[in-house]
Each structure stands twice: as C-alpha cells, then as structure tokens.
Image 1: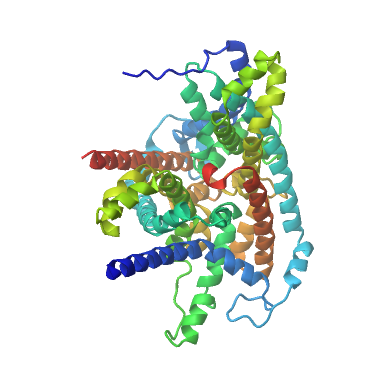
Image 2: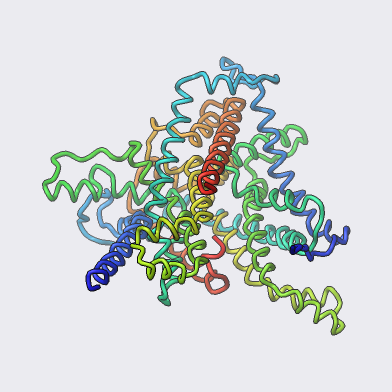
Length: 291
Length: 273
C-alpha cells in the first residue's frame, strides 16, 4: 500500500494569510457580496404600476417564472439550443482536436493561435461576420441567387438557425482545446496496437480513443453547454429583438422593465438550471462509462 | 493488403478534411469581417463593387470608437496590474501551503470564470446601488467601479496560470539557494520569481484580453459617456452593419492577434486556455 503524502508544509499562518487575504477579501467584496444582495433582491416584491421594488420575503418571482408559459418557453429554447450546440461542437470538434493533437508540423502553435484568436476577439465582432454572410444581400444569398438556386433571399438572420450557427462557432474553440489537451496525453502506441491487432479505424475510435478521451469529452461538453446557456451577444445580435434566450432576458428585465427582483430571480434560475443539468449529465455519463 | 493501405489513406484524408472544415467554421466570421472592411460601397452586399481603405480613416472621425478603445485600454491595463498584485501572492500561497479550506479558497478565486457575465453584471450593479445609497458616495457608472469589476474577472486567469507554472517548478532549486545562504526574500527574487515569470506574463496577457473583450458584465458597469469598445461595437451593430464597424473589428483582431503571438512565446497556449 502506498501513501500519498502532501509535502506542502503546514501553513506558517501569518505568511499564508498575508499572501492570500487581499485577493480573497477583494473577490468576497466584489463578487460574493453582490451575489448575496442580488439573491436577496430576488425575494423582494415589485409593484409594476409604480415600477418600484418593495422589500419582502417571497418566492413569488420564482413561481411567476415557472408558471408563465412565456418564460418557461424561453428557458426551454435556451436549453434546447445549448444541447444542439454542444452535440454539434463535439462532432465537429473531435476531428480538428485529433489532428491538432497528433500533428508533427512546426506550425502547430500557429494552428492553435488560429483556434484561440476568435475566442478573444469578442462575440460582437464574430456576430458581425455572420451578419455579413446571412444578410438578405449577404454572401450566402448573393451566391445562391447568382447561381440561380433560389429566387428570393433565404431568411436566416433573426431566426433560431442564425443563433445556433453563431453560438456553435463561438463555442467550438473551447471544445477543440478541451479535447486536444486530453488526446495529446494518450499514447500514440495504444492506437497503433489496436490497428496492428486488426481493428478498423472506427472500432479503434470507439473502443480505444473515445474511452481514453472521456475526461476531455466531459469537460469540453460541460464548458460548451454552460457557455451556450449564458450566451448573450450572439442571440441579441443574430436573433433580433423578438428572439429570446435567458441571458438577454435577464438584461431586459433589469434595464427595460427595471424589475430587479424578477431579473434577479431569472439570473439565479439560469445558474441553478445550468448547474443541475451539468451535474445530472456528469452522473449519467459516469454511470455509463463505469458499466 | 493494398486495399487496407488505400482505405487508411482515404481515412486520413477524411479526417483532415473534417478538421479543415471545423477550422474554417471557426474562422469564417472573422474572414468576412476583414473582407467587409475593404469594401468600397457602404452596404454589405455581394459581390463588392470595389475595394477601398477609406473606412479605416473614417474610424478616427467617430469619437465613440476612439473613446471606447481608449477606455477599454486604460481599464484593461489598470485592472491587469491590480489583478497581478492580488493574484500572484494568492497563487503562491495556494501552491506552497497546506491549510484548511484550501480547496474552497481556490474555488472562490476561480469562481468569476464560471459565473455568467450577465449575472456578474447585474449582481455588481445592485451592489453598487446599495453602496451608493448606504455610504452616500458616487459608485454607479464610475471608472473605479468598472475597474473593480474587471479585476474580479482577471484574478482567476492570473491565479490559474501562475499556479500552473508553480506546479512545474522544482522545489529543490529553492532549497539549494537556501542551503547556500540565501534568505527567503533573496530566494524569492532570484529563484522563484524568474521561474514563474512566464506564468505571470501569460496570466497578465490573458487577463488583459479577457478584460478588453468583456461585454456582458461591462454593460451594467458603464456610465453615460463612458463606454468600452465592445459595447460601442454591440450598440452600433444593433443599428446597422457597415464597413466602418468592420474596420474597427479588424483593428481589434490585429491587436489581439499580436498579444496572442507575444503570449505564445512565453507559454504554450494550448496548455492554458
């Protein structure tokens, strides 16, 4: 039996406190306290006629959300889009992650920069790119009409399709990077062994690569799903004013309706639903792979 | 036998093809934005009537883009410096010492990465309202409130990257320095600091980029006449899309691309994102 001993020294109290306290206190004040206040607000009442918040302790805002079909439909749209996006990202992302992980090219780091760059350029800029492609005189419609395949422009902008396409592009890099880091850790020899024992590529993938890459698949899908649930700029710009997802709804309740209690409740519902679905998926996934 | 070789080669082509498709998908929106920035006509219709560079000059006539850029840059720089000052010691403590609640402390510092931007923004906004009412000082929409919000989202990047670089550090070098008579400060300055410098640089650059591009949280923290670049871009796009906004985007892409290339010299990007 081996014992793993944490070799870190027990804290020398004063030094540890001096090092850790500033950051902890800062985050506690600037993040935890605000979250606590937002939660408290979500239990308050709102007088719609006067557009005023009234102090109370009630779960009415949460009940209102789940009993009004208008809001549950928005939640359902958000969940549905997030699941679609995550599934597509996994299918599209795996081959790219595999190629990046296995390439011997000296341009590998440039390849990775190309994948990471869009992440940091910002969602609004990428939405602008899709607007150029999907607009009624945009690239796609101009090309299809030029080829005589359609007579009138396809309506993609301001539909769910545009939003899904946009969010997939936003989230794909996260999926690729999660998968790539895990695949890189899988020994090439394991794959070669499967091949030399006569396994066709698909069998090798199903029986060797997939199970070994499972941790990366799990972290990638969770990250992609969370990001899709929280998407703001893409649905706002590509979905148009009538299309609603959870994050734009929170913003709308706060700024347009000035209904802070209800906006706060939606914010916490969004976080709770995301967390619950993530944990549930995690459990199902682990039980499946344990079998 | 030949059949198997052909099939394997075909499989490789299919794999590379699928990978190229995914990469093209990721890059497609950026390619179109860059293309649009050079159109001669104002309406983004295809095929373009011709090409021109005039939109880049037009940016400078629109004060809001220049102001937005300058505010985003200032906030990014100040918040990154503060984030380093807070995050690096915290990462050192989390790596070096074993104490109760080490896990929860570490999770707390990384938490801003997982809380949705919109929730961060609304929570900070109501907090600012409470503080402003309670203490009777200006908070809402001030520069410092915006900077504080950005520090919160920079800290996790610094902590993550510095912790990662500490994990790869061989402790025996430090012990050797101390055996040779260096005190703790000298050991820190001459041994530990140089070793974690790549992590600090990477953490700072990532934190800066995350701050510079932040949209959702900042929406709630900006005040009248004080707007960051991503918000200016969002509000412009809500109204219309034209080559001017594309030219602004091109400049942002160039700036961030440069920062990425610099970062890549210090750390392997794939390890840290």
